[in-house]
Image: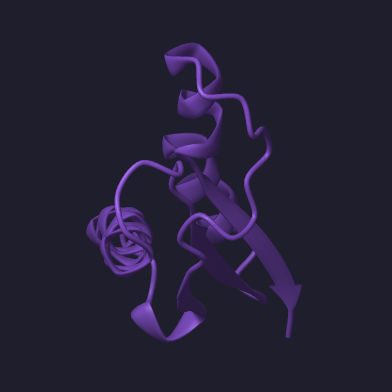
Length: 89
């Protein structure tokens, strides 16, 4: 994560969409909120590293874009993630 913050500092002409995801455990409403909080925590970290908040956009996907449907704990962890979409201004 520090390397990504360094990248954003170096290349100030980029904005970032921070997209939070969850696994399928829990209700849709709970997972939506959790994915938003996951994206928010990454956003707050980047701000703490000196990235201007106006360059950061948040989105929570909940469990809508799972990478795996398998219910084994190891595979569920794959769906608990944050992705970045880097956008050139």
